[in-house]
Image: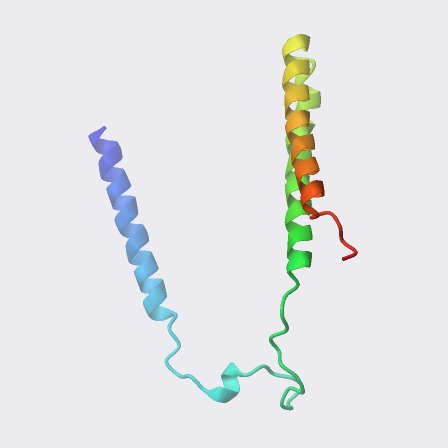
Length: 117
């Protein structure tokens, strides 16, 4: 137990030293207005380069990511079917799918899936 604690302490110290060195060495000492401004073919930009980000697009991306992870979690269920008890497999698969459908219904009822508005 003492060896694990010692190794953990050493790793913690090394990671703190590396983070400290990275933050010290990465500081920009020369701040120039021209270097901080966006570059647009050598001319001053015609409009603001900070366009507001669409929160609707971000929400759709997060929902897609969640459903993508759910599909990845469903893939091993098919492989496990041959190796496990059929009754336990059926109950656990139905339970998992019900949780996913409740989540889908919640997103639908909250209006997160209405993309046209």
